[in-house]
Amino acid sequence: MDGWKYLSIWYFLLNFSKKYCANMKISSFLSRKAEAVENAVKIARKYTGRRAVLSFERGFHGRTLLAMSLTSKVKPYKFGFGPFAPDTYKLPYPYYYRKPAGMTNEELDAELLRRLEDFFLSEVPAEDVAAIMMEPVQGEGGFIIPNREDPHFYA
Ligand SMILES: Cc1ncc(COP(=O)(O)O)c(C=O)c1O
Image (cartoon, rainbow, N blue to C red; front, top):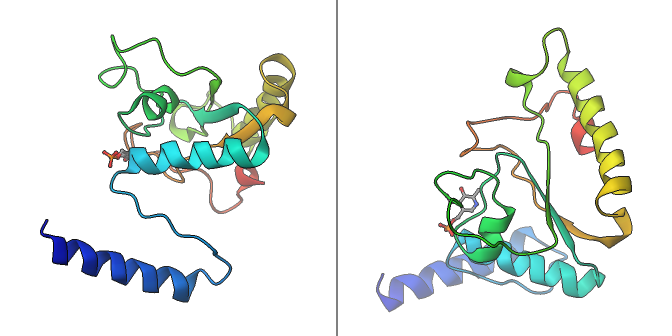
């Protein structure tokens, strides 16, 4: 991309963020999503003073070391590239298509929230969590959409 095009995109985004994100004090424009993920985690850790970052099974967050560590899909993204970044943990994503037979979506949401409570007891206390990285709709995991009608999972 030539320099002028880059600057005009930057200028457009700057005005966009000033207009639509009224309370925002600082904007950071990055060239890759993996870079955005890395920086979001750095900012969250610095701000909270906490260490742990949670992400979701089947999620994809990019190809840098930290983004790859938060990524769950092993092949082709992680296979043979370890060891990965510490203090990254995976939670189950609400995957209604593969839920146990006879279970409703709401029951699956409730079960996953129960497992989240177990997770905070057995893996990382909630007080140590700096950030939770969640795709609102998973793409690489197979186009998985959480329950939006009755979003228990986001509560
Ligand atoms: C959800 C998600 N996060 C992160 C990335 C990584 O993006 P990039 O290749 O710009 O670093 C992608 C790429 O498709 C993505 O779909």
